[in-house]
Amino acid sequence: MQNMIMTRLHAILFVTAVFAATLGCYTLMMHINSNHQQLQHRRRLSELESSSSDDHWTWDIPSILSRAKKKSSLSTQQPLRVLIITTSLVEYDKGTRGTTHGFDRLQHVVLPPLIDSVKSMTSHGWHVDVYLILGYKNLAPHRKQLIIDALPPGVGLEVWEDAIPLYYKNNFNKKRPRSDQAISNGDHALSRQHRFVLRDKLPYYDFFVAFEDDMRITADHVLEFLELSNDIYQLYKEAMSSSNGQEVAVVDNNVEQLPPTVVNRHKSNDGASVGNDIIHDPINVKHIQRLFPGLLRVEVLDRKSDHPLRKKGVLDNHRFVKECPPSSEAFRYNNEGGGESLLDPTICCDEHDPPRGKMTAHPTMEEVVMWETNIHATGVRKYPDPIGWVAAMPVEDRADVGSFWS
Image (cartoon, rainbow, N blue to C red; front, side, top):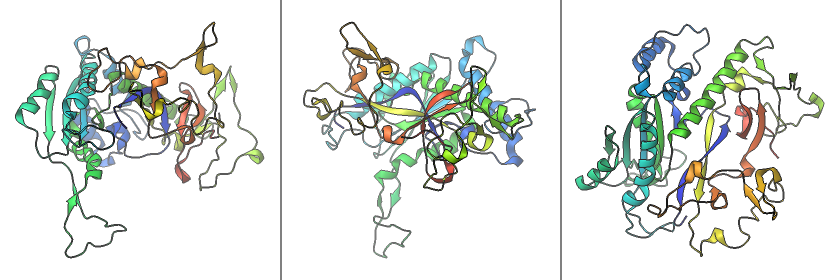
């Protein structure tokens, strides 16, 4: 999209499946082999052996959250160690996908959100390093120095140049390549390379932030992610100790909320054990273990008059406006009857004036649009305390834990 800066909205989205996420604490991303749990625990966090009787599902989330909340100068705990992994395909724009050929992408698109992210985290006393995965052959010394000079003191920088993997074109369905076929650069697979970095750096950091080169991920996002991870963990512990067969129910005004009768339940058509009418049902341990915090990706529109999304009525008449019209409760109305969104774009996307690079100064909520998803892919569900109402992203087949999806 032309002249847009991608960022993340400070909001919560549940992804109800276990998958390899690009943002996450390593404890949510892998189950440690039982023979190595004690070794891994001590090597990573230098803590005493856990006395908990559970199965170590997200067992170090409370500790990491505690360290993230405390300023290092005021605490005897080791500061949170964060590695920001940024993947960038080109140093200068190619002129494709609405970009301007030769535009300095590194300086004007990559650096501003990266520096914002780093400074927001170091201001909390966290130890932060940056790892760049580059799709171009080399980063000239003076260009690398440009990055170093922009980073706060004490922030390390490591660069993986020429990181595009090789592959055989048109080699689908595991067919063997032709004997005369040459390998090519797989530009599309550059976004996978962060996994090698994460595996290599796993023992040395507590939290990994891995995104494309124009994303702004701040300490607030990390803290929100950890807070919700901890809430899920507390819900899990409550279910493990529950007398209701490892289930936790939703309680409103001291009254347990019961699901509809079985005969009225929606039947899934994709093999899931639940239908699309789960609103405030009890949730069991098996389903709690599939919950994962997520972030909703948004993009800020530029203010060029010829932008296609700024044409009159385009955003007001989106694809699902008839099925899901905007709620009147989502706006604050003035005496003239005009409505102002209750969502605050400054949390995710604020930028001073004059703006840096191609960013938009002080955007309004009407200039923030969702990216890579829409309401068609989203359900809602009320989870037991301390979580409450959330947006939920349903998944197919047996992994789905259920939500109300219209």
